[in-house]
Image 1 (cartoon, one colour):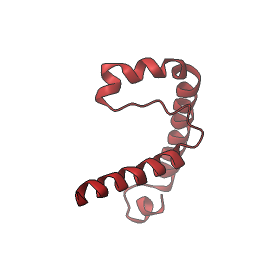
Image 2 (cartoon, one colour):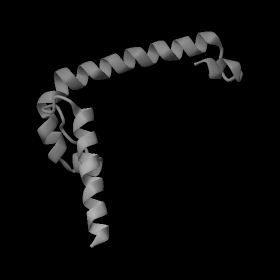
Image 3 (tube, one colour):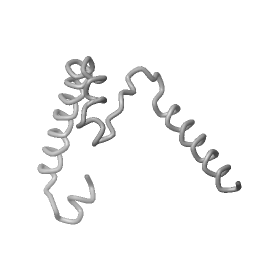
Length: 85
C-alpha cells in the first residue's frame, strides 16, 4: 500500500478504498464458497471446468498446508529415486 502512494500511482484515499473493496469482496466470496458452493464441490471437481482448471476439493483435509508440504516432499523424493535408476 505504501509503495503505491510513494511512487505516485495512487492517492491515500484510493489505496484505502481499494483495500476496503478487496476486504468486502473477499469476505463475500468466502461466504459464498463456504455457504453455497461447498455442497457442489464434488460436482464442480468432476466437471470439465474443474478438470480444466485443476479444481480440487480439500474441504475434508484438516490442515491443507501440512498436507501439501508432505505430498511435495514425497513427490520430490520419488523423482530423485527415479533419476538415480
